[in-house]
Length: 339
Image 1 (cartoon, one colour):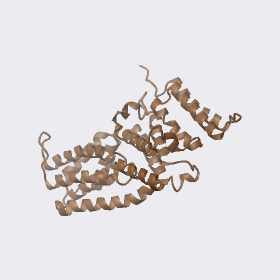
Image 2 (cartoon, helix red, strand yellow):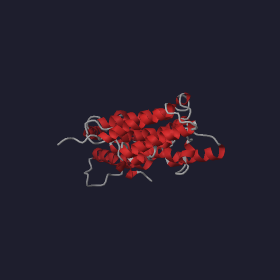
Image 3 (cartoon, one colour):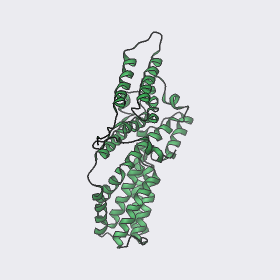
Image 4 (cartoon, one colour):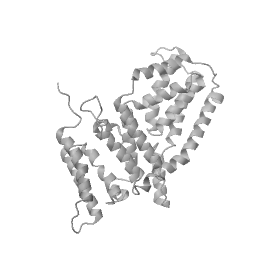
C-alpha cells in the first residue's frame, strides 16, 4: 500500500503559493490609491484565502495568520487585530499552550524529566532535587497541573521501587515519599512563576499593568525578574524538605536510580518528531528572551504574541520524517486545550 504523504499535491501547491502571493502583492503589486496598510491587508488576505481553499494547513490554524502578519506588515497592531476575540495576551497563552501540547503529544516532557532526574544524583536528597528541578523546568512552559500529573506516576514508581512495594499496594508514606510528593507539588508552582506563560495569573497581572500603567511586561523582563527569585525559592524549599521537615539521610538509592533509567530506556532513542518539537520550542523560547534587546532592532513590530503564534503554527506545518501522512501537530490534539 502506498504511503499517504503529509501534503497532497493541492496542499503542497497552496503551501508554497500562499507566501509567494503574499510577497508579490506586498512588494511588487502597487495598485493606485491603495495605502501601504491596505496593501498589507490585501496581501495577508490573499495568503489566508489560498491556504483556506487548498487546506495547506488546518483552517483553524490558518485563521491565526492575520494575528502574525497584520502587525508585522503594518496593516493593524496586535491589539486591534485581536480585539474582536480577546486580549493579545490570550493569544500569547494560546500559542504557548499549543507548543506545550506538542511537547506532551510526543512525550518529550517525560524524556526531559527523566533525563534531569537521572543526571542529578543517586542519594535520597539528590533524587528529590532532581524531581523538583525537572518539575520546575517543565512548569515554566507547561501548565502546573499537567506537569504535576505527569510527574506523580514517575515519583510513585520510584517510591515503590525503593521500598520494594508491589504495584497493587499503596506506596508507603516514608519520609522520602513525603518529601518527594511535596517537592513535586511545590516545585510545579515555583516553576510556573518563572515565565510569563507559566501560569495564567502571570498574564493577568501583565495585562492589568499594561491597561492601568501603560507599561508592557515582556517575556524577557518577566524572566529576568522572576527566574532568580524562583531558583532561590526552589533551593530553599528543597533544603527545608530534606534537612528540616523530613531529615533525609544522604545514602545511595540504587533501586530508585535504576527505575528512572529503566523508564528512560523504555522511551528509546530521540525520535524525529521530538527533535522537531525541541527545535521549535528552543527557537521560540530564544526569540521570547532576545526579542526586547535584539530582535526588535530588525523587526520593530515583533512582540511575544507574534512569536508564540508563529512557533505554534510551525508545528502544524512540519511533517514528521518516517511517519507518512503525519505532521508534528494536528487540530485534533487541541481538544486538550483548557479553552
